[in-house]
Length: 314
Image 1 (cartoon, rainbow, N blue to C red):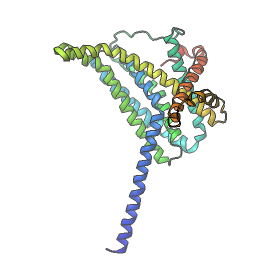
Image 2: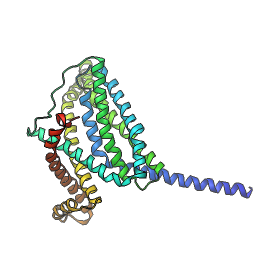
Image 3: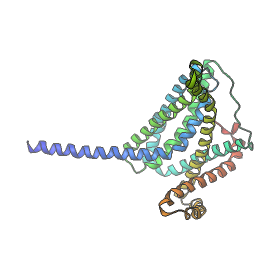
Image 4: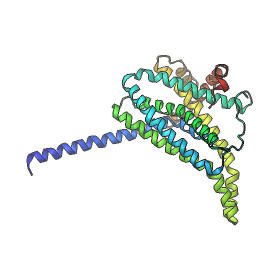
């Protein structure tokens, strides 16, 4: 075999190894960044069903499909280029953006908790009535896409903060991958949740015996599932929002909140063996971050209600 061909094959093999390593790095970074965004993802899944509730069941899936397409457009057309440019030319702005996102999540979580305990009724949701008409449908879809833009911006900002050390094109691939995977996961779950009661009703009316019982159980279970998702989403918002504040305030030079959480969690972590300290410390940090986030959110809620119509509720 000619020497030149051997050298060429060696070069191809070396490039393949580098490419494989890059793919592995992208996969690991995407997983890490996507995990950090979990709280906002749960919130997205918990919020979206309200936009299709009250419409004819035959319009629910088409509406979710429209919202999902709008979400992909938000992430890939608007937010992805902005995020890559930000990561390349103004990464120093990322902590400030994440602090703003953390404040938003803290406010949302605190508002829902205050509503739950009937402390704040100013933005409490009313049960939607059955609505008809193409115009009304388009209005709700547009509102859902605007809400998605806010949540998607938070997801992309959180993900970007985890991949600032990557090359710009790797950042783009990671953010695009996260955007697509999260959109498919969220709106696939929303579609399943929204249609689950219809599936249960069909099983209950078209079958007998165990299948019919299962269908009735599914119908009665769905309100409990929706309530659980709402509660989980609220807790996740408080945890993620508080964590964003603590970490990014520390990144800007003020370590007070971070030190306070360490001081409060240290006695609890000390009760456990060394093998469990990391896990217990992480759980304690999440809980205390959530408490801090709720306190901050409750503090800024009156300001939001004062200056933003309807409390800025999406």
